[in-house]
Amino acid sequence: MIFAYNKEQVGDILMVILEDTKDIKRQVERKGKIARVYSIENKKTLAWNIFDVSSLISISGNGQVFLSQSDIDLLNNEFEKEGFSEKLEATQEPVFVVGQIVDIVSHPDSDHLNICQVKIGNDKTVQIVAGAPNAKVGLKTIVALPGAMMPSGALIFQGKLRGQDSFGMMCSPRELDLPNAPQKRGIIELSEDAIVGDAFDVSKHWH
Image 1 (cartoon, helix red, strand yellow):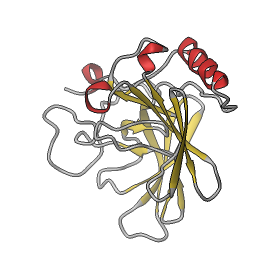
Image 2 (cartoon, rainbow, N blue to C red):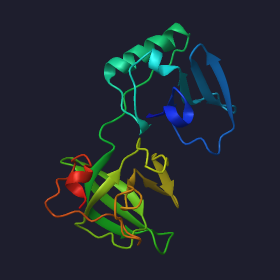
Image 3 (cartoon, helix red, strand yellow):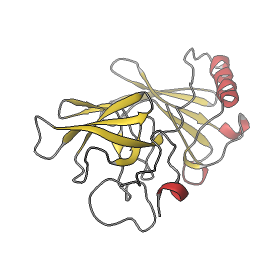
Image 4 (cartoon, one colour):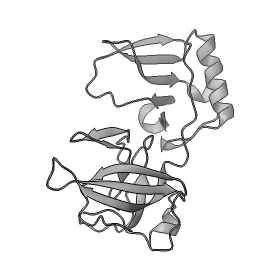
């Protein structure tokens, strides 16, 4: 689940995004402060909009926000009061982490994409399909995991690229909206002492 809030641009509305909905025909049902966005075809819930959310929880931010478990519990109580049986779950944190490429093979159906195995923790490796020209085994970079919202507003979900599973995205400095980002293609290259699995910290990881 991706939680997003931007009172200045959108109003006092918490948006809860469950999956990419751009190609799905949608319908909305609203009960009280809660609106459920669902697929017309199969009735599957795609997103929630929670109106006047600051009357329910203390919230601030501009873009992706992360809620405490107590906030989630309060919102779920509101869901239950309005007759919705589904429940919200806290977003995985962090969603931007240091990763290290440990294996690369060429994509069988592309002349510019690679299938990368990227270590994001002591015991966790994910597959990411990427076209970065500077990707190489051993490189440490910043990975946006499923459940992340990029500074541009783009959402990161598990998906497929040319038939191959991809569980996130390795980020360029421009995609992370970093100051003085070079105007060239390529993922961010971290120093060798960056610790795999650490949460992305601009002050620590970008100079």
